[in-house]
Image (tube, one colour):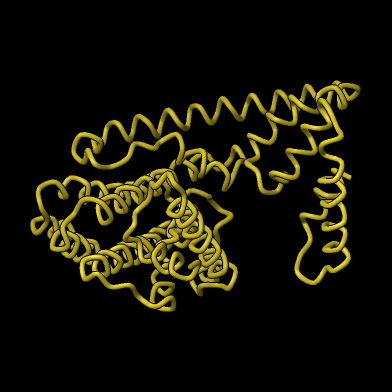
Length: 328
């Protein structure tokens, strides 16, 4: 039943037989859950809480070794190979995290911008869920840098800058020129310079024929994100709660999926063809749906925290306010 339930998670829209099977097996597993003990009880609880396809591959692999080792022990060579592969990936990931942590420390942004949260390991693990293959090491490093830039932007617009400073930063990012740095407040100048330099560095270290095009697309997505964060700041400054439709127009950008997905392409090598990039830049329905789901899911979680006795979120986020109002 556990295997059947896991398989049913791979169904797509319209597969009514698997829909019914999923509901049937889930009900059965919940019914017998409290009658089980030991390893089997833990396996049932785990699959109901988080099916494999919704988990992080490295976390799921570690859990599988601990819970299923006895069952697969008769396949000694396969188990040994799996463990060697897991250990190899873990060593590679430690080295990648070391590289990113050193880069983050060398930027000195924690001292220059003390209000920015320090979340390097957490964000690297998040990016690791995008692509686990050893070949994409460079892509993981670049995309983690990008999500750290997102963190800097988010904390600056959301928690620190005045509305006048936010306007200046948005204008500078839109211009994307070192000459725009003179208009920025002193504390913003170093981070703006890092933005420009890092994107320029990507093109130097990745001499792929489509790299300039991909970087251009990533910069545009970065500018879209900055403009969207700025719009949220303007709403907060004016005490305005936008309509759901107006919020979602910029909410798709603030989900950060567009920026992170396009940035992920920078280090992926020859698999990224000109045709693939051209298709990606048409804003396919797959990307828009992902952005929409990511934005709504994030806001729902924020509202759940907002409505809990342990309040820890931004009360002035327009999405949180809209969803809280609708919940009432």
